[in-house]
Structure formats: structure tokens, C-alpha cells
Image (cartoon, one colour):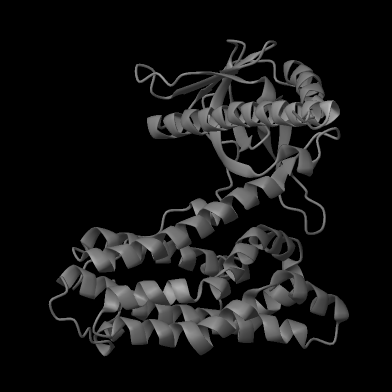
Length: 400
């Protein structure tokens, strides 16, 4: 707590020195958009030219299922097959030639770039694709598909590691593109390039959520809805967690604030922040269990080997123990306001839902702290009471 308070004072002084000037109107801390934050491409309408001809290969057994859901399920299966082929293309076209190269430096590059990729490819080609097809063509396709995701939760967790590592892999590809990577792209006739191919696992996870969202909205059977809801929540949590970890990885903490001191990262987002009523500045705000950190996005012009091009430089650190919260006001729906004895921080969001959610989460943390303080005080009183009884000793009785 003391370290957090000290950091707040030091870093706040730096803001005044380096960020003089007018108000910032941009809403983003960086031009880079994490793949987990990108919107999936819309699913093409049935009968349009964008739909693959292989959709008819998979027959849905539940004939009373709404046509839209039948179509979405077939689209999921069709794109799953295409996804496995894309993974095979990356593994056989790029990863294996680099791992088998006589140059050990290239072998090492392959290990760094394709970390977790072969594990994902093996799982989908050997297990998940067949499981999805079997579930989707069963008598209860929605429940079957949902249970397939839930049953394979442990295997799907590899995506968390992959999505967090992905930006480092892109940085390595960009730095060492000239040479073996360019040669392989030319040999394969790959117009997309390796870097674009490496995004596909993350895009697939985003696509799974899109499919499950549509299944949720289109299902009228309560049992199916319950199963699909569990699968949808699982995939949503994967994306939410990996996105938080990606941003956290880019955060540069002050020397006097350790990772252990912050506690768990609960959420992060871009806000326009006014400190003590001054000009609004775009900041990436991190809400931890024990503190709130305001950071400025900085993109490196020439990142070093394997270094990611985006970093968040801490501008303010405020311990949760010293925060006061102004109740959320529907009259100012896009504003979340916190304050300390020394400073005030007004956060403006592009969405009233974001501002309201942040106000609610901060309020829950503060109420949780008050309850914990009360429990600690009650426990202290109980211990003191027991100690007083022991010091007096057991009561003595006289014989009549």
C-alpha cells in the first residue's frame, strides 16, 4: 500500500512535465488493435456467393431446428475444416522447413514463432474437428456442440497461451522477415504472408464466440440454451482473459510497484481521463484488486529483438485503500469519477455501459474492503475476549 501511494506521487509529477499541451480527442492509446478485440467478419447469408459449396456435405438431423441455426451449424463445420487446412499449411509450409533447416538460428526462430501452434493443430486435426461434426449431425446438435466445447475446455486453454504469445511472434516475424521467411512465402506463393496466417487461431476463437452467440439468440429450447450458455461463457472468458493478459504484458510498472502488490487484473480499457479537472488525456486504465493504474500507450519505432512494439508507460498509481468513488450518475452516463485526498480522476468512456460497469466494479471492491475490515475487527475482538478469559482462569467453586 505504501509503495502504491509513493508511486502515485512520483508518476503524477512526470505527467505534468511531459504531457503539456491541449486536450487529446483520440479515444485509443495505440493504433494497434489486439486480434482478440477485432470484430469477426459477418457470416454470409445463405445462398450468397460467399458461402462455400461444401456446406451441403453435413446434414443436420434435427429437422425442426430453425433454418438459420441449421445454416450456422453447417457454416461452423465448413469453416472448421478450412481452419484445419490453414493450420496444416502453416505447420507444413513454414514451421517444419524452419525446424529442419541446417541453421540452428532458424531452428530457434521457429521455436519462438510457432510456440503452441503445433499443439493447436494436432488437437483440431485429430480430435476437435471430428467431435464437432459428430455433435452437429447428432439428434441434438446445439447441445452436442456446446458439450463438445465444454468437454474439451482443458485442451482449448492452449489458446490462452497462444493469444498472449502472438504479438511477440509477430514482432519476431517482422524483425527477421528478410531471409528464410521471405523465401518460404515466395516458394509457397503465399500472398497473405506468415504474419497474417499467425492471426488465424485467435480469429477462430473469436469466430467460435460469434457462432455460439447466434445459437444462443436462435434457440428456444431451455435445455439447449443452458448448455450453449455455458459454452458461450467459457469462450467469452477465454477471450476476455487473454485480452487482459495481452495488455498487461505491455504495461511497464514503476520500480517501486511489484506485480504481487497489484493483485489480480480485473479489467482494462481506454478512457479520456481528466486529472484534477485539467485537460482530458487518453489513457489505458487498469483496474487491479489493490490499485488503479493510469498508463499512456507508446509505440516503439525500432523495437529490439522479439520486443513488442506497444508499451504502456505508467502515469498514475492509486491504491484502492485510498480511493473514494462518486456514485454513478445516469445524468452523466459516460463518466466514472474516483478521488483521493490529493487528486481526482474523471474517466470518460465512449460507452455508458463501460462507465457504469467500472463504477459498479470499483464500488464492489470498496465494499469488499469494508467488509473485510469489519471481519478483521470482529476477529480481533474475539481473540482479545478469549485472551481475557484465559488470563482470569477458570471460575472456582466452594463447597457448601
